[in-house]
Length: 190
Image (cartoon, rainbow, N blue to C red):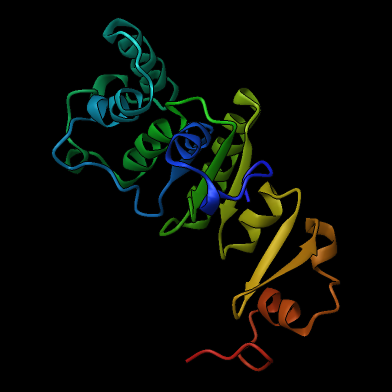
C-alpha cells in the first residue's frame, strides 16, 4: 500500500503517476555503467517527465551541485569512488522531487564514521526536501539516528517495534536478540 493505494491493483498509468512520487537508492546504487554521471541523472527525468532539454539540464546541474559532483558530470560511474557513486545514486533518486524516498541499506560497506556522516547527509536532504524516508538497515546506530518509527522483519512477519527509545525495552525476545547481537535466541540463522 502506498498513499492508500494498492500498488498491485493499479492500472499502468496510475502506477506511473504513483512511481513519480517515489525515489529509490539501491544498496549497490544500480547505476548505468554505460552512461555518464549526468546521463544517470537525466534518465529518470526523460523517462518520467516530458520537460524540455534546457529544464532537464538545469535540474541535472542542481542535483550535481547538491551531491558535490559538479566537476564529474562527464565521468562514468566506474571512475568514481564508492562514496561518489552513492551520492550519484542519491541524486538520481531525488531527480523527480519525490515525496517518498526508499534507501536500501545506504551505509552498507562503510565504516562507522562514514555511516554516521551518510546518515547525517540523508537527514539533511530529508529536511531540505521535506521527504518521507523509508530506510532498510541492519545498522542499529543508523536506525536509531534516522528513525521516527522502527519496524523489524522476522520470518516474513513485520513487527512494529516503535520509536528508537522504545526498541531497547521492547518485550519481544526476537527484538532483544537482534539489538544485543546474540546468536542464541528465537531467531535462527542457517
